[in-house]
Image (cartoon, rainbow, N blue to C red; front, side, top):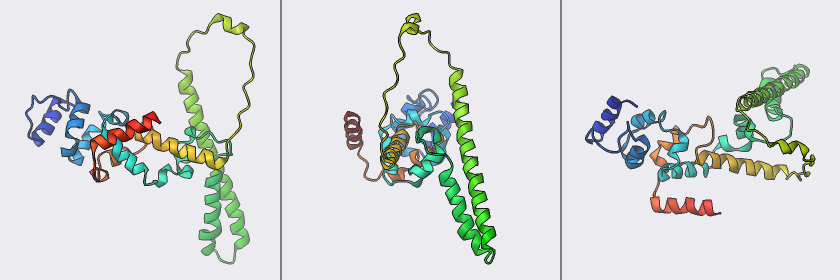
Length: 233
């Protein structure tokens, strides 16, 4: 943020231009002191210079995110979150099956209502659309994994100890896979946790961070104690 934009915000709040902290030199400290007094259009202008992970240091913003996740938003449910953040889900099932099922249901019910009397053709269409959708989703996940692998390949590796070649290969211990319902619940909890602390890529943080309707009867001391208890647990 340049000096002129910073001065406009200070004038809006009736603060002197030599105010410390200010949006130009210390935007995060300025936001922490003035979050309650800034309107949405000014807060949105701070989004690009204060990323979600940095905003996590502000207790009021963490509180808003925590309250939002406690409403069980649909985008954080397993079926939706697995599609939005496929690289975070470590399930081994074939990708695209949920999407394929949705396509099959649409063709079998919605489309069938408009084509009454041609059910054999509708059945074939449902299967075809299902196969196409499953393959599209599987290809999307493969592309994301390939892109991630290419990015990781660009990171230089540390020099390994030359004696490591003499060490015998130890096979990994078998892992007892937990039931699917348990893994789904753990995945959803992890998604909510990542959102609260600003680590969830492509999430719409501004919609929650800048909305004071999530404050309720906000108490900063109670909020700090809540997060302290969470970290200890």
